[in-house]
Image (cartoon, rainbow, N blue to C red):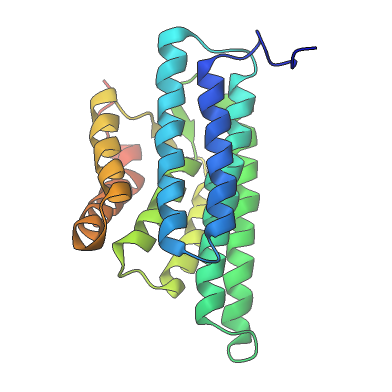
Length: 226
């Protein structure tokens, strides 16, 4: 007897499932190697863009939007939140700094809750549209992961960023989809931030962080949508 998904899911769905698997791996290694976990989250973001390209070129399945949101919960909700919480727990011991320690757990937990909420709303109301309300979870996870890889963003700022991004994910602010040429440029920078180590990797991680923050702050008002 063959699995139920045979004949129902396509190549784009397989890439989406791979994205979810990367989310699990990133969450698993987050407590041991923050840099590796951040790279895996960024790789999952690359797959997240790739499955959309494949779906547009070869067609998607009815399950595609649901699989995409479920995968994003793992890769861009749970994994980056655990990455930030583990960085905070490493820096702030429970006995020494209980308030900071509690915030280091609470804000990433809220981040997960808001990511789940946003993705549910996206699937119900924005899927298939050229714009979406609230900061995309992929963008939020990219900012947090690039911040880790850039090397100068400390745990306090990362925790604060997770709280800010959690709030922004459920706002009414409208974000247009990136144009293909802009997505390609950002994807190239993202891949270089993943594969390069040392100073070159930090430079491209900073460049990715700069591009992501620019889109976060300027995209809703100034991004060209014509």
